[in-house]
Image 1 (tube, rainbow, N blue to C red):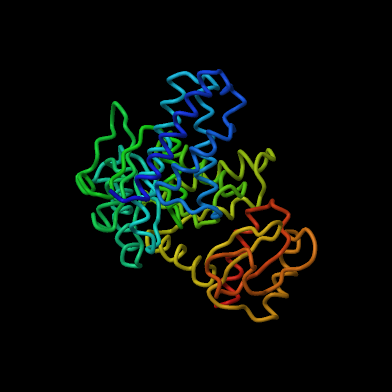
Image 2 (image 1 turned 135 degrees about the vertical axis):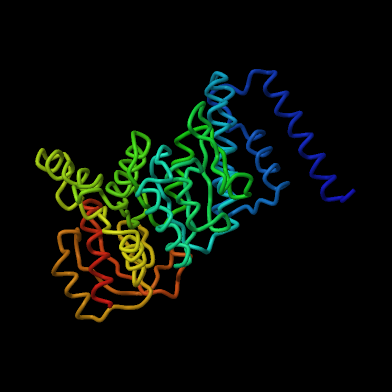
Length: 374
C-alpha cells in the first residue's frame, strides 16, 4: 500500500474516532459543526480526493461539505434531505456531461411536446436545428417528442443534448437521443431548467403550452434581472395559414398592451427577445449577436463587456452618448483585462460602472456594439 495513503487513512480513522467521541459527549450541537475536529476531518477528506488548499475550488467544496454536515444537527427530515442530495447529484452529473463538450456554442430549444410532425412548427424546428448545426452549434432540448424531437432531428444525435424530466405522462425520450451519452435525466424541474439556461449561449422559443411559457418567462426574467448571462432569445414558428397573426405576434401584443401599458414591465424589455421571420432569420440573429460581442461579467461594480475586436475611439464615444443612462458614474471606457479576471485575458473590454438595471437597454447596447464594429 502507498505509505502516504496508509498514513492518511490512519489520520482519517483517528479523526472519525475523535468526532464520534465529541458527539457522544453531546458537544456537536446545531451550532458546533465548526468544531475543530469536524473541520480537520473535512480538510483531510478533501486532501484524500486531491483538493488543493488555498484555491477557490477547495474553499467552495469545503463550504459545501461543512454546510452538508449541519443538516444532521439541524434535524432536517428525510424528504428535505432527499431533495438536497438528489439536486446536488443531478447538477454534478449534468455539469460533468456538458464539460466534455465545452467548446461548441449551444442553443437551448423550448417548445411543445405535443406538436405533430406534420405541423409547420415542427418543420421550422428541424430547419432551425440543422442550420444552427451547420453554423457549428449544438442543440439542447428536453428530449421528448414534438418540438424537442424536431430540435434534435435537425442537427442529429451527435450534435444534440437531451435534458429529460421524469413525468408520469407525455415525456418518453425521443428516438433521436434515446440511449445517447448526452441524454441526462432529472427528477426536479429546477435543476433541469438550471442546465437549460446555464449551458446555453442562445435560446430559441417555439410555440407551446404551460411548460413552454414557464420556460420562456423564466428565461426572460433571469436575463431581465441580470441573474443569467445576456444571450439572444429568438421566437420562432412555422408559416401561419392564411397569413394571420402567429403565436409570437400574439405574445408580443400581450407584452406591449397587457404588460407595458400597465407598467408591469419596461418598454426596453422588448429588446430581450426577437421575433424571427424564419428559421434562417433566427440563426442569423444569433450569429450576429456574437459577431463582436464575446461575453460579459462583473468586476465589483463594473460591468465588463468582452469584445472579439476593439472599437474605434469615436464609436466608444457614440456609445457614451447613446447609453449614458446605464452608467452610474464615470464613462464607458475601452481597456484590457482586470487583474481579477482569469479568462479571455487577450480580449479588449468595454467597462463602465453599471446601474444594475435596464437590462433591456444592455441588450440593445450589445446590438449597437456589433453594428458599430461591422
